[in-house]
Each structure stands twice: as C-alpha cells, then as structure tokens.
Length: 389
Image 1 (cartoon, helix red, strand yellow):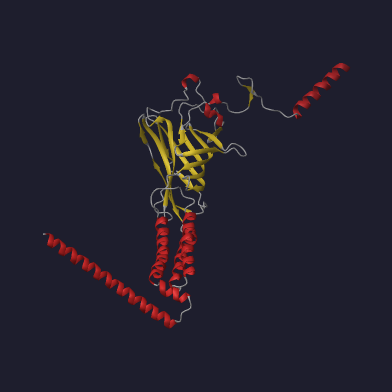
Image 2: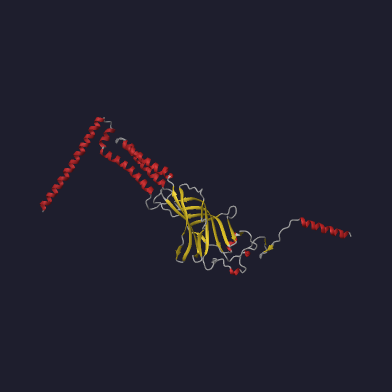
C-alpha cells in the first residue's frame, strides 16, 4: 500500500508540474538539421525546383516582365561643379510579379515579409544606375532593405541607397545657369523583349520638400523614359531629371558688386592732377591686379573649360575699363609731360598757363611742319614721276 500511495503522489506531482510549466511550440527541422519556426524558401518555390530558373525573367503569356519603380529622394547635396557630380540619398522601390512562385500555406495577411537573402535564389531585376560613380548600401543599425510577397505573387523590394552621380554640366551662362542632372536606371542584361521598366503609375517620385542647397534651387523635377538601342538590342531605361537653377545672391555680393566698385575706384584717377604720377599709377595698377585676383577666385570651383562663360565677359569688361583708365593717364602724361615737370618743380599758376599755351603752340607748329613736309614730298615724287615719263 505504501508503494502504491507514493507512486500516486509522484504521478500527481508530475502532472501538476507539467500543467504549470511553460509550453513551447514544436519545432520542425529542415534538410540541414536546423530548427525553424517561420517561413522557409522551399515554401514559396515550386514543388519541383527544376521548374524554376532564377536567371529567366517571369514572362506571362509571352509578354515581357514589367517592373514598376518608385523613388523617394531624401536629400541632394555635395554638388561639385569641378568634378561634375552630385550626391543623392534615396529610397528605391521595385515591384514585379513572379507567377512561378507559390504562396505560403495559411497566408492570411495582405503581405508576407520574406528573407531578403532569398533574392539570391529567385529572379530579381538586374537594374543598375547608369550614371552612378559610386553606390552605397546603408547597414546602420540594421540593413536598410526589406522584401514583401503579396497575394497576387507580386514582390516588393525596398532599399535605401546613397548615390554619387555624374552630371554633364554646361557653364556658358554661369553664374546665371540652369543645370540639368539626371538619375538613370537601366537593365544590365535583359532586352525589352524580356524586361520593361516603368514608373509607378500612382506615385512614381517623391522629393523631400525640405531639401536646401547652398547655391542652387530645384526648379523642376520629373520622370521620363530613356530606353536606348545598342548593337545587342534595346535595353529598357527610366530616369529622373532635376532642373537646378543657380541662385544669384552669392555672386552678386562676392563678384559683381566688388568688381564694379574696383572699376569705379580706378576712375578716381581722372580727378587726380596729371602731375601726381605715383598716385595715378599706383591706383591704376592696383585696381588691375585686384580685378585679376578676383577673377581667379570667382572661378576656382569650376573646371577649366575652353568656351567663354558669362562671368568671363563681365570680368573681361571690368578689366578693359580699368586698363583704359590707366591708358588715359599714359596719354595725358605724354602730352602734358613738360607742364607736369614744371608743376613738380614748384612753378606758379601763371607760369603753368604760359607753359600750357607754349606747349599747344609748339604742338600746332610741329603738326603744320609735318603736314608741309608730307605735301612737299608728295609733290616732288609726283614731279619726278612725270619727268620720267
């Protein structure tokens, strides 16, 4: 009896412990012996893996696969005129339908989150940024991408990227220019017979309205098609176009106003007496050198282009005005040299007036003598020619 009683007590305690202990779901084991509690890749692939080729686009009824794109531009910055590049932070969304896949069993949600690594085992668009020099994928603090599967077997892949893009800038109107920069997305290996890129019909592009650039404004942005024909066929391509208009404020206060003041300052020499040779020469030469230095500084951020820019016309015009003011002093000094010399020696105003009158009289006399000599020479040459005949 005692043993039976103890056995009953032990069974009761075991049952009580089993009821109060936490219960965990039973775990399955995959082919590699690992425990799994969620969806696996084989749950969405065809039952016969040989029926699925990840290198072939999922064409439906012989029609090319359509991939819809959406881009959210988070920021535009680091616009470099010298290297003709700019940097953009974006969210890139791609969606396509792969009818070869299977839906997971008991899928009740609108979409199911899949492991992004499965993209290595299923077909995905081979898109690349055609005019990108560098593409950085964000991994802080977790990889910034995800993959969704919808009920109609549509896959949505979203990722966050930082792009360094090239932009063929033209500076004929600089600094009144408007640059047109693009972001081109093209297929690497599929022609338009197999793959077509289209923009999302409802919301293809979203640009952050708080984007602020130091010297440029985004005057306009739009999406368009850029499909191009190569020797191997037509390859689908779509692009975003940004119209960047340059602000005039920086160059107004750092180029136009200072250079205009330098030109006006060089004109002060017109009110300085001709005999003040050091003052006039110093003012003219200093203005010319300052203008040349400013011209160099105003174009430090630009590449050395071979055509004429609007800023070149302005700075060259200012340099010509300053140079002409310096030439005016040279002409005055040449014609008024004797008078200026006497003024520097301390002659009175009456003596200077007599010197000016004498200077004009001698100039007139020299002019008449030169004219008479030329007339006589012409007459003698003509007479000699007639005698020869």
